[in-house]
Image (cartoon, rainbow, N blue to C red):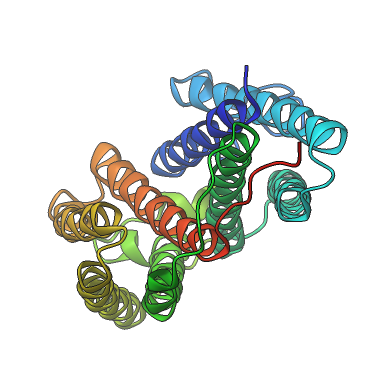
Length: 302
């Protein structure tokens, strides 16, 4: 197996982990296993236990794959500083994710604490998307595929970074809205915060304010997406990635409305989160390709 293929497999598993985490939140199953890293004696034998166990198993598999990638990196690609640094940062992000998740379980941290978990998962996804692109680029270079630096990519950098930053802000706003219990409080429910040992849900006014903030950040993301699409078509570069991003943002808006209309039905809310992850993954892919396109490639020395 080629390195870049294993890297992409790892990236996909990160995405699966994010979706599983969304299901666990939707099912209020974060503490169905009271111990960490082993489950201990489950507090419930419901179907949510299966999701939690699969989530932990996949986390273990992900850890093995990342260590495998790092060993491979240092043995085969230590000359490529970009790949090494991206891989190391990816490992650091994974360690933060695992340790922080353990702290949440062991100390029953409030729901808001999960926002850090959410943002770090997006960063980790972005890093491994970039590593996969770098690895593919290196594989092409080794096979004599030479690409000259393309200055047209420079015109895309500002719009791409604004789009990525807007996406992170929108994800953060959505995470706060969900994990403070504000989304449930709009419907007079509090099962999520109760599972975290909290007993006082946000007020209706606070919940509405957080919803408005989330809507505003989503609107800013849409505007950033339109700007990025305009820039890519002007430069005739990354038009497909830009178009896919904008389509996903539109779908995301519809899923946000559906989440409220269905009173946070788990399938809808989880799909809403999955599409958010897809959006950030595609944006990270575009950013990665911009920097690779600017650097070009040289044929390997004979």
